[in-house]
Image (cartoon, rainbow, N blue to C red; front, side, top):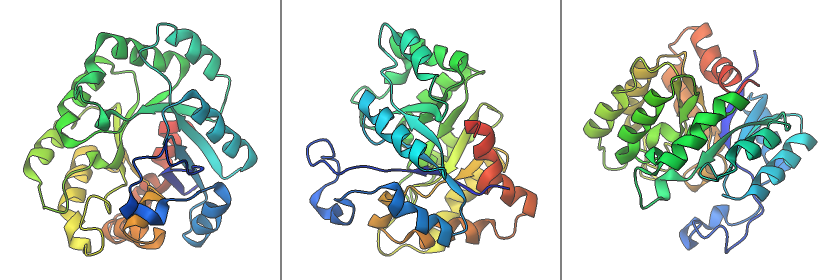
Length: 276
């Protein structure tokens, strides 16, 4: 079975566009390209990956698609499209010609309108994704989980995935409100969750395995091993630690699970969700 990293990024560093990379993030203030990741995946027993957008522009799709076309180990691209565009149907019809383009993501976590995803224009875009066999990645903070649930309920035939377990405040051990809002997804079979991005929500340099376990318990109980997938969030994870240590958090937690459950988590679920 293929082992898949379902969440990582490539970029050519641009100080203006990538202003989210602040001075205290200098370890990722540089280019990260497929040739940098491939040996890391090989060392960690990962066969392939899905690259996720990091810039909200049409050009991002073609930068990432070009990377995917030139590198067989990149099986899918999650790009960006203006879901509120009046001609969204035409845009999606055109973009479905690119077979490695699997879905889209918008940086909802950064929007001042926390419920932007429930705007009529945004939902119109979401309503068309399944017609063209595209997925949707939720990049949100915990305060937006309730809106994500409402959106997912409105479109039961649309495949959604919550990135980075919705970024709970692991550093300050804030659990209860996030837990309640995550548990509300129990039974919503069209929503998956990525076990990714956790190290950057913890105390960057002083986390322990046990810091993550209450959060992993919640997502595992909520989504089951049929709707969870592994993602490294490389190279952003390097702000805290190596790829090996990031993957080690999941490895340690899931070591007691059955082989079939681990195969689902480390590959089958991503293959199913993204049609890899």
